[in-house]
Amino acid sequence: MKRLEGKTALITGGTTGIGFATARRFLAEGARIAITGQSADRLAAASAELGPDVVTIRADASNLDDIRSLTREVERHFGGLDVAFLNAGTGKFQTLAEIDEAVFDAIFAVNVKAVLFGAQSLAPLMRDGGSIILTTSVNNQMGMLASGVYAASKGAVAAFTRVLAGELADRRIRVNAVSPGPVQTEMGPKLGIPDELRPAFLRVIQESVPLRRVGQADELAAAVAFLASDDASYVNAIELAVDGGWTGVKR
Image (cartoon, rainbow, N blue to C red; front, side, top):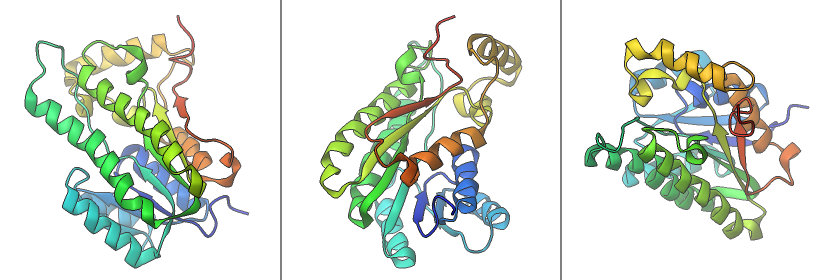
């Protein structure tokens, strides 16, 4: 039997990268899914590839009105949720001297505010025994140079993971986080790394990861599918690093 057969799932930021790979994996595991994204064009492209049964919802993750509208749409389509993967995120690498208020506000709006109020809004829709999965990052554990604002935002999400797991425990709703290391889809423009520096940046990363490579979105999707499934029924309040051993092995 497929591990998510008969379950309903929401994936925010589901049109690209880890979110899109997870949408594809959830479908293969038998789930009915809804995905969100800000771009109508990317939503259309994702729908064309994933199939007509996927519910697509245009939403700005950092906008509280959009979060409430999203919740109403999910309830209208599914009635309730078994899995919520709050994955939408953004980031930019800047040194202390470069950080400006606009970048700070933009990162925290998507990575922190959207996760907290998304969980708050969706929690009443979650069926007892369900699973909420958040996306953190190994950056919140590593002190990587120029990642201060991004790392801090993901550290906040890690804290939410543990607190929400406690607050929703009476309903047996498990709350866990997946913590990606360097993943191919996230390299470069999303983090503000100039084109000409990406090859050198990638070489440094590959040399520091014990498995000597960056990860692939499908590998993260497999970890999310595990946390969403009943195979993880006794896994709660953890931050699962999927990073090739980057944070666990010092080279």
